[in-house]
Image 1 (cartoon, rainbow, N blue to C red):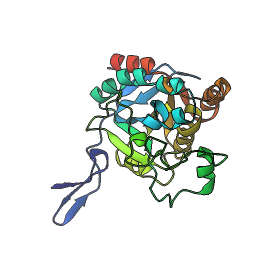
Image 2: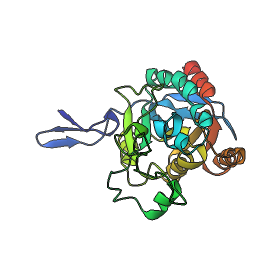
Image 3: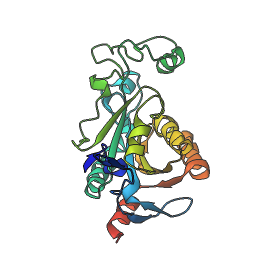
Length: 255
């Protein structure tokens, strides 16, 4: 029989005269207990993925968009070291890593005025897709600003999804990829926690995914009360708050 499907979690077996639709290669559950708030959780490592949002030069590097706007990028760089430690552990445990990053079209034909306004509210200075004086185009697909920061190392086995809205589920292939891999639980990391991370997490919850935000793996340049509200709403309405150490501890102590 011939396997037909890009991932073992969603694959037919086909031969002349018969198609086997049972998808018998689905992995057995791998329960992992994780300390979290508002209560501890047990997740299935075989059906989980890490979604890392916008850890790219325009938000996290000198010479990028936020730096050009005079914004202190230190909070957006805070997740780098925790992610450097976490990502190899998840890879070793077979948990897929999804890098979700801004990357707009050069002609901006799918970008509406309110999104342009969000990136230059008074119309002054370079905005979305435009070139920073002496630098790269802002969040343009393929540009330096849209690249993942040098300190993080996306592996060849990792998954890359380009977005052009704050939420990574809007008009992208993210949902199709995750469902094809049979992933139902998503760990969220990246920047900004109260903006692109939060809107993507909210949409994930609306679509039926189980969601956990990794507190030490997210950052934001917004005022402290924005992060406080984000944590409050994640725990109250959408899912759970935990951190990378709790996740690693759970993975390493699982049978």
